[in-house]
Image (cartoon, rainbow, N blue to C red; front, side, top):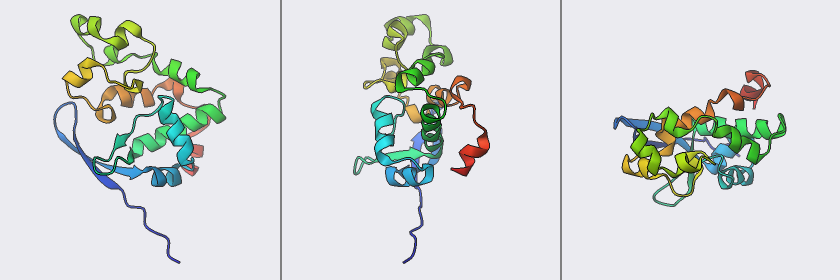
Length: 166
């Protein structure tokens, strides 16, 4: 029996600067194999607001970029190696709010439910903030989403070698 080759799909999207970007994306089954984390656990991270996935427009399947797979592994390590729970991770994610990263003007902030509520990351909300909708921002290509994944408070204390071994 031959082992199937896991080929990524390609996702073409406009970035915040409206340039076209091509990115490899993987189904949940492939993301699970690459990360060593079960599909059910990955779905739970999404339900908990720790991850926002692309959906294939043809079949509504979840699609994950390489960066999101690394983020999934990081979440797992924060929970299992560092002892954080979902709420702890959510609280750390809001330490650098989106309106600071994007430098939103005051008039935009006053209408923004993330700024006024400040209880969760903008990309973890079921309905995206109006400013994201108005500016046609996609979470996966937004610097707020990428910055959250690189938050130094969310980097597990274990070495990078362990991450690469998984």
